[in-house]
Image 1 (cartoon, rainbow over the protein chains, first blue to last red):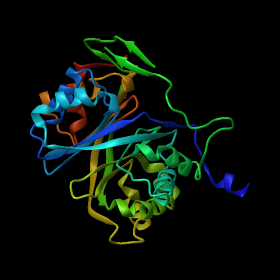
Image 2: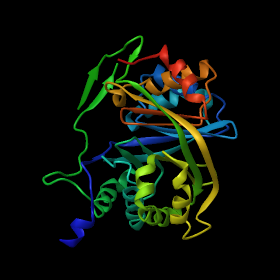
Image 3: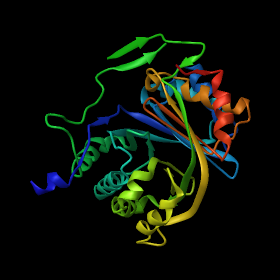
Length: 166
Length: 165
């Protein structure tokens, strides 16, 4: 009982479908918006994205659905070899995290305890998304639930359908 | 099961475009092997740091490190954050503190399921040479972090592409 009182209360934990994380580097010859434009041209959705400018060059990563890999390879053919790809990855989205850095810290620590890699993080004001090895997603969810408590009768969920915009 | 949808608009609708100024961006590199230790340190942050955290994001760097950013509402809690993280002085590398960044952010209908949203935002900024320090998008939200004074030019750049109610 004592442990449950020490857990963080969260509203939900969402597990993604299989994703691919693409890492642009300072060697990538196109500006980020042009790289994304090539994906837009193929109607490829970006599920999360994080970029920063260091020394005037923008680097960062984004995720796409693994189902879009063929079209992504085609779209990014002109810059092949200048980006890295991590596959397969999956994401865990915790909401709301209410900007509690203590919760984020506990989640990172819990994932590290089970040796689940952390490939990227991206938060909004209400949700925190972490990417890890897709094959360890359920294990990572269990680790998160060792430090965070869902409402009664709630469980981690995966989307039952995927919206694909034409 | 997949659901196919067609939803396109010449000017992308948002639920509103908002900005904040006088924010502080703390950036550092951390070895992925030390993420657990960093997590323990973060979990011990005092409540004042907790209240000041707006965004946390990280991406892999080419040297194998995880380049991590914490956006704070105020620079006044940076010493407390650094104190909390100082259990292992070698844990954080290449620390940068930018005390005067600004943020412009918005979300819109089904942004998370629609391609082209991030591209539209970054293309609009690039077309106006609006400076960008960092950007993070997850779910239906888009956050653009600019240097001091940059949020107004970013807002102007976004105006022709995104519509606020």
